[in-house]
Image (cartoon, rainbow, N blue to C red; front, side, top):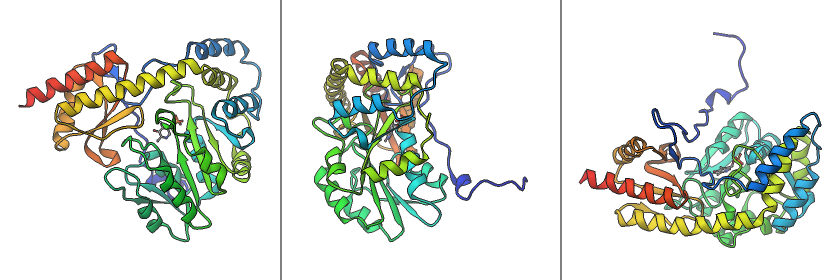
Length: 361
Ligand SMILES: *Cc1c(COP(=O)(O)O)cnc(C)c1O
């Protein structure tokens, strides 16, 4: 064994497992495993990306001014309190690096996103898992889990893979009752899919202990581009900027994200298609006797009788060229998370699950 060892905590990290994208022998599978936009990104964004490729000898700017101004305009927030990162994952990483270390505790909930735990362990801090109640974040359980060593509390709203939401009123109560040294992080990766929801921006503005993260990976269809952002109190954003690499985002990333953001007509279309098909797909699955909570995101969590049935359905779908996500790693051994696809994709996955259920009877 080598005498060269990594920092404490690093070897405790279970590597992130993404949604698969291939099935042996299937040339174009229907991929519903990573909550990607089934319609892809805006054509304006794609054109901008092509143009940006002609300028690769130029360094990008370091302050992300144009993108922050566009975000401020579209989301009606203050440009000076925005930080842009390589996906919201990077903003999550900055938060852990800046605010937690050995001896500190970072809270995430039972079915929370796995990056919270990975980033916590990467800085040598201790992840603390708090139970949810019926697949919804439980504010009282979080408060009961807080100690004088709690530094960060991560909540995705809507949640992934549950798709459920915790009411803003509850989050206000949580922010007000957290220990003085703890920061509340509201991960709004799916905020745009929840009708009339600001992702927690107003709460960020009302308090000095709340940060919101957002992404271009989901609604904007730019998961492959890697751009996200955070919104927080001026002093927190200043801290995060000190550890951010000055050139963390390339010119193509910055310019493409801005073009996607400004194509509001396209974004509105994607959002309304998702809202319509999310209801349709849930009804179709409920009609098959499956358990499916109402979702506020771009996916549904489908619960089967047991793990064996979930795994059998996953295999059946793969045999038919459809990829969904097993979520045992998120505390749902009997679950499959299915991204809301386009209309043909939704009809196909519902039909195929129907065949699976029929075949089992
Ligand atoms: C997809 C997702 C993100 C987004 O990650 P990016 O790094 O921005 O691609 C963040 N949080 C949750 C809960 C997600 O599901």
